[in-house]
Image 1 (cartoon, rainbow, N blue to C red):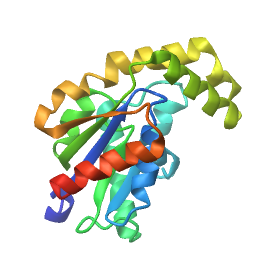
Image 2 (image 1 turned 90 degrees about the horizontal axis):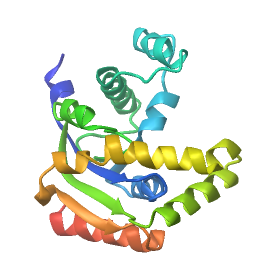
Image 3 (image 1 turned 135 degrees about the horizontal axis):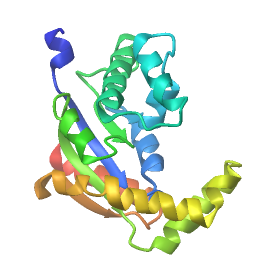
Length: 201
């Protein structure tokens, strides 16, 4: 592996429960020069299933199994290199905006080998009824009727609480900024960018 590939990439993480607006904020940040938005879903969608790595992914996903953490990060790293080679992502200029990855503490541990986390933005939204309302509205807008059910919504929030939220404890307090995710999206973006300017990210 070349030293260029092993060089840690500057990154910020956007974390929050389903419905907190992390995808919206990730996309908005990705429109700003100097930031490159990388959502976990984009990595899997861009995957070339003809490659060896792609075949490994299919092996799990076709059976409905969760993709192991090590393979998830391997796929992520390969896709970052693809975006770099396609001149979409410029590691010497762009800060990675990670949304949906890492998904658990183990993934955060593995990612330590690849990224230099400058800040973790936690979109806090303690009102679970508001989260459910947002998720239901998004599911209906995107015509994903199954995702609008209370059972699915409750399961997704519980999965976040059990698997993803502990990531906040993995990073030091100095690296974490809590932002009220129930605010208007423009205000949330304003708060994130304000903190980035403070830190000169």
